[in-house]
Amino acid sequence: MKFSEVVDKVQGTVVVDNPEAEIASAYCGDLLSDVMGHCGDESVLITVQNHLNAIAVCSLAGIEAVLICHGRPVPDDMKAAAEREGVGIAVTALSQFAAAVALSSLVPAAK
Image (tube, rainbow, N blue to C red):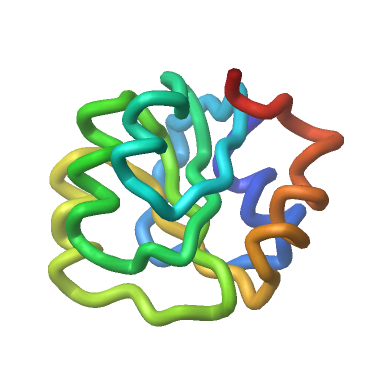
């Protein structure tokens, strides 16, 4: 699935586009060390973590995109890092649970 399909499904807004991203799974989490250990390549990370460290974790773990929940703003340094690293960012008003449920029919959960 493409990043744009993920964004549409959660009625989100693209902050940093990643049109080439192939999303194969989703992972919901805020503890970034847990994300690094369990979220796989070609995933979308569903989180409330709206800071630079989230992008660093994505780069290390091969995560293609981040979905920031509860409409939290994305700081400029996070946007710049995402653009540099090729990680898409979208924001949704949905909670993490609601976003995960919305995406559950489109992508499997990461193992």
